[in-house]
Image 1 (cartoon, one colour):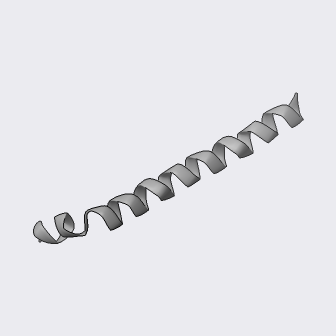
Image 2 (tube, one colour):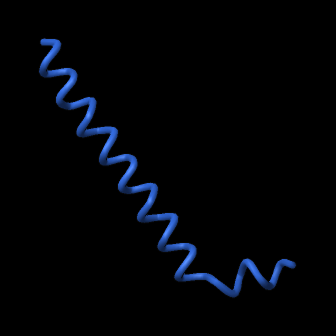
Length: 39
């Protein structure tokens, strides 16, 4: 049970980390003008 929980805990952590980095890069590259327009 501990190995099962540990394996899926690491997989879930990597999935969340990858999705956050993907969204961060998407908004940084997709909307570069929106951040400058608020200055």
